[in-house]
Image (cartoon, rainbow, N blue to C red):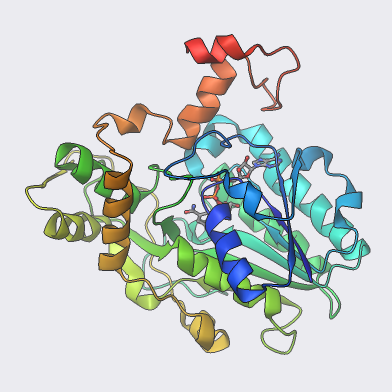
Length: 358
Ligand SMILES: NC(=O)c1ccc[n+]([C@@H]2O[C@H](COP(=O)([O-])OP(=O)(O)OC[C@H]3O[C@@H](n4cnc5c(N)ncnc54)[C@H](O)[C@@H]3O)[C@@H](O)[C@H]2O)c1
């Protein structure tokens, strides 16, 4: 078996590779990424990509279908992957997330790929009152990022057939330690604040609902989707990936962290504008279809794993919200020093020293 993972050099990719190597020890794993965050390593002993069989370094917008030769399954992670980046680079987000994903899927189908797994997002439910959202409930994408996931699902649904089985995993918000850790995710942010400054600052009033999933459990879900039979969910399946137990209000996450890490204070911004994104999600379909690949990590385990990982790195930056742990900061910095152009393509005229000085 040959599996292509796009966007493998990000937050989730290295963890996914570990899972797939356990699940498919004979498989050949190929990565394709343009490396925006390749340098943002955290506690990695070696470059994670040395663990796979072949790494392509390229832009999804110029994807060469020859890469798909002999590939059985595609896991498509490559994207401008959160709301802040999507808001700042809206047109680029559309080009990379919608158009390039559609093109990749068409190439994959033509090349005889039999399984296509798409990393979608529960953020397409946007603001949803009246109980947990099911897959066929109305979508309410509020951002360029969320709209891109809706648009891609639509194209994938049209392309799916018995020979081209597509699974769109609508992931809850990720959390957990990675060899490319991000701190622009709610639980990771809270644990980082607690470890570095004994302080958790909730930017909202703490009431929004946010379902979470640990990256190891995301990898388990992707593993399941690669092996999914058409009879288990249909040629096209969009499914919420997470667990009903992990629907939390943001303030509950903060207090859970403060319970585990001693002497931590929690501040809530009572004057904050109401957070427009708030949704609970129903993960029953995923439980029914994938009983052997259900999330295993619990909230306490996720917090302890992050704490251990951050402490192992000697993490002490109380100002981390302005640091390279935030994906938008990385892209903005690379733009400002001319290493990325306005299309977020690598500039042909870059010099290393300009960024090193920044
Ligand atoms: N992290 C979450 O909370 C979460 C939740 C739901 C879904 N997802 C989805 O899972 C996927 C992976 O998320 P992540 O957190 O690892 O994101 P990430 O931003 O850490 O990684 C994305 C990777 O895609 C690559 N990439 C971006 N544009 C590219 C292009 N034009 N060509 C080639 N490579 C490109 C980047 O270099 C990066 O390595 C994304 O599609 C994201 O939308 C993430």
